[in-house]
Amino acid sequence: MRFVKGHGTENDFVILPDPDGVLDLTPEAVVRLCDRRAGIGGDGVLRVVRTKAAGRVAPALNEAGLGDAADAEWFMDYRNADGGIAEMCGNGIRVFARYLVDAGLAAPGEWNVATRAGLRRVALGASGDVSVDMGPADLLGPAEATVAGTVYRGERVSVGNPHLACRVDGPVAALDLSRPPGFDPGVFPDGVNVEFFRTVGERHLEMRVYERGSGETRSCGTGTVAAAAVAARSAGETGGGPSEWTVDVPGGRVTVAFEDGTSRLTGPAVLVAEGETRPGWI
Ligand SMILES: N[C@@H](CCC[C@H](N)C(=O)O)C(=O)O
Image 1 (cartoon, helix red, strand yellow):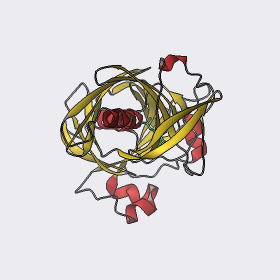
Image 2 (cartoon, rainbow, N blue to C red; image 1 turned 60 degrees about the vertical axis):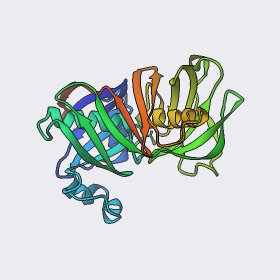
Image 3 (cartoon, rainbow, N blue to C red; image 1 turned 135 degrees about the horizontal axis):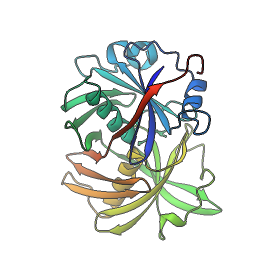
């Protein structure tokens, strides 16, 4: 099985080129690939499938209107490190787009990628940062997370996938995220990605995240959009006007811009290695 390894602000992925959707990518195989000691290591897997073959790997979604090759040539089949499926990945889609250009499967420019959350438009050059139109960040009301016995009030946010973005007063580095934050499973029946953020300057946040299905990661693109959306609303910037936020995460920095009811995530996407798994290992 051929693979490429890449990351976006150190949120790292095993990329599996599978244009015809023929790999038997079981949850167990994903866990083995993402294992940092016995496998390749990663926060998730990005399977690269032609949209016209996506019916093989995501049949229900395809029937619900994933789009077709005219809308998006490629489908991002994203998996968390625990083998579970997620709707969207903001760092992953940048790495996915960089891989396609690097492999000569897409040209630099602007085009759609099909995801389980719908189509997302990426913009990238021959090298450098990648921008993604992430769609609207929907603020859905208050909820709580618990870390080491302390309750943090936050906001439920949908960026295609579920988030709980909690503002904290002190440095995010002080939080103990060695265990999963507690949350109400009645509010989040499918689990949730929990962000903790603090304002460190004008339209400038620092953030840490505990991801559903992957644990604490060095960055979460959809999470940065969720945190910036909550911060923008607190700053009274809820209209269609331009509002650009810088978000520092342990693995680097991204920017999140809101305009005309949508959000744009911009940040690095780096490919670091490629290879082949040993026959029979998976
Ligand atoms: N790291 C990703 C989000 C990946 C999916 C998430 N763990 C979930 O289960 O929703 C990002 O960069 O957005």
